Image 1 (spheres, one colour):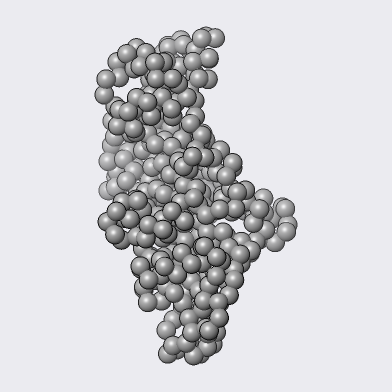
Image 2 (image 1 turned 45 degrees about the vertical axis):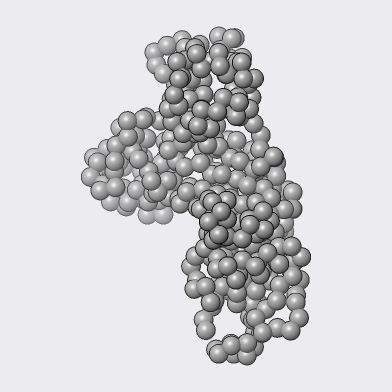
Length: 365
């Protein structure tokens, strides 16, 4: 019976080293600023966290950010991919085993929970855990008690759990595939990482950073992306989200023949599918007031689509009263939602956000 190595990052009390490893969130969109601000507010609160989002959105980066901004930042950060191991091995990997517990257990082994003692355990794709292991995980979360396979006594581990999933666990609970009590224990605080299509305005910064990173890795530090290529990246569909964008840029950097990569390098990509929606940028030409109105209209349209047209919920998220929202909907002709927009969510601890700054700036203009 084999075992899997934990991804353990033991952080020593070295401020310089810790700062160098601080996760970097790239993007100045409203969605990402709100998410990062919410993480900063709740990370020091030592409770379990559930990070949801589509594949490739950067859930593991948010999980790392929770750890580095918590009181456990000097403790170990351990990652366990629940989808990467067979179900029969999950118990031994998470909780450990004693010598002789099963065939092949020639020596005792500490599980991932024990390795994360005093720090954070990130459970990637927690929705893939078998039902039997879900029950044991619930016990560990409730009392900090773990029982290695074959052991007669329980052990205690002081661990903060951050669970990540691309599944809707509430729907999994309704379908009977995930324990309801475990879901509520994991989702004390919940973050929803937006897909790339909902913060396209971050694509130029993301693409440039990926080009810089891979240029340094491949010994081509002067690499840059042409404006036409950046626009093409903005208009592309990215079903694989930020991870797909990163892979596309890495491929173009690796195959480049000039210091500036042109749009032709991307046009031949078999994964490229053009989108009719460009990055969110200020309209030009137009006065400042006109450009602010255009941006406000786009934000309201996305929020209305995210809440399926529920005006009360949209007003709450935007920091407006319902009457003000209705006035803006009439002003901008938004009878139907346009583009889905979802930011971070963490239950009752979620900041509602506000577009009042746009209104203030517009009035000043």
